[in-house]
Length: 310
Image 1: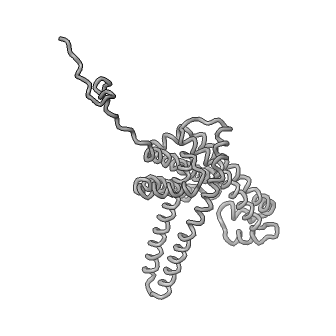
Image 2 (image 1 turned 45 degrees about the vertical axis):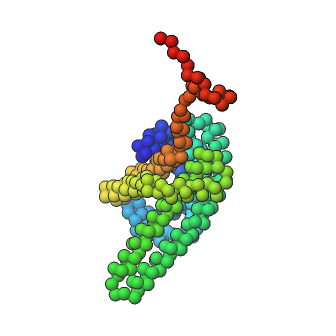
């Protein structure tokens, strides 16, 4: 299934490049408020050398305290473009899943028409996802409080650390399971044209619960591949790239973002193919054929056997 999903992503790789281009453009605009604020300050200061050839925490803190620099403005600008990216991805997801479901090339108008058709359904699914994640967040807070309480009451920190690690693992698995459930709901809504999101969630719940092992194994392997690739890139970045190699750092950071987008689309394509395989209509069994000459006549008596001439 993973090989088939990768083949589908490769055949429809234009989706990958368009999503990455969207991320790159919005990321560029999100950084402009920061550039416009700190550029005039650092361009006229010798202290910029301590940030360009390394990272001096005291210099950075002094920079943030300058009246020309407003960190809250930078944060609001970044949040604004993050929300735009989220909204646009909700718009594009319907078209992406439609392309993966039908495995054909869509015209631009047809693609965005499919995205607009499912946009509000995916908005409602996102709201329900946030509601479902509230108990998981409360569980995480409770585990953290329990871990802190054990660390305060016991002389040895090992029990508190163990509780925290086990709790974090459980919360992570719950987050992945919930995300997987809503992924299947989105795929079901597109594949079946389901308008009612609650029916889509109910159908996805039954399908995910009945086949959780095989479906979660697909999702987990690609999630693990995402984090392993990210760890490798950051290890290379820290180990072999100097602090002032701005161009190389930019390339590596963009490689991480591209890898995240690639593996996420790989997940969606594999989940779509899995859904098609597990919801395919069963093949009807062939019915026996009886020639008309051997059927009983309307009068109820059996027809005489046909004469055979030798």
